[in-house]
Image 1 (cartoon, rainbow, N blue to C red):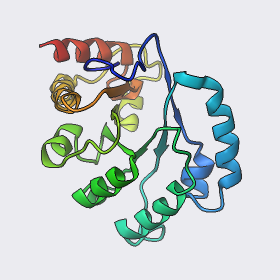
Image 2 (cartoon, one colour; image 1 turned 90 degrees about the horizontal axis):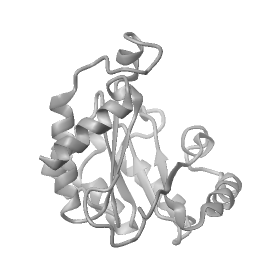
Image 3 (tube, helix red, strand yellow; image 1 turned 180 degrees about the vertical axis):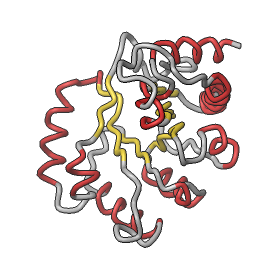
Image 4 (cartoon, rainbow, N blue to C red; image 1 turned 60 degrees about the vertical axis):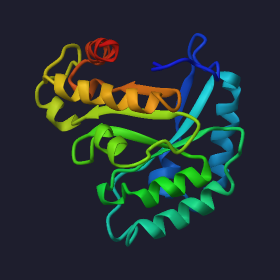
Amino acid sequence: MVARADPLGWFDGFGFSLKVPQVITHEKILVDCQKEVDTFLDSARILGNKLLCCLLQFGYFNKQAFAGLKPFLDRLHAFLAGWPTDVPVAMEIRNKNWMTAQLAEFLRSHGVTWALADQAWVPSPESLVKKLDAVTGSFGYVRLLGDRAEVDKLTSKLDHTVIERSEQIHANARAIKLLSGKTPVLVFVNNHFAGYAPDTIRELLKALEE
């Protein structure tokens, strides 16, 4: 969905945001993976102008992986040096203590969009948008992910809402509106946010209209 006018013409119909394969982001963690990157990009480019962006979605990094934010940014810097300029890229991290102005400044200097996730254990998109300048690329990116384990305890079918999240949905709508005042916004909703993504999307659209 998009929360404002679409000057880039992305949403004339539909488009795709592709996750960069986990072999790159989770297994090799951006090191010695040029072959995998090239193979992925060769496939992604088949989409042509329907390719909105590619998402570098990282898991939580413990101290054994990175002592802190700077070593991670050093590695990301080296990786992005080889990323093609014609493929927009977004990035999501899950280390809450790394979600700082330093991270935002780094992403902005590289033209990388900060993907903000409404997920357990990390700051909410609204809190980040209000605290920091979270617009770091040519578009905004918000993901409503929720708590997979919590939802899985309540349903295995993912065909109905099992957790009431109206307050969070309205908070996300406020964040999207703030972002959309500066840039087009991509929003993705996972079934595990509340149990059934179509219901969540309908409620979010209603909140955005208010």
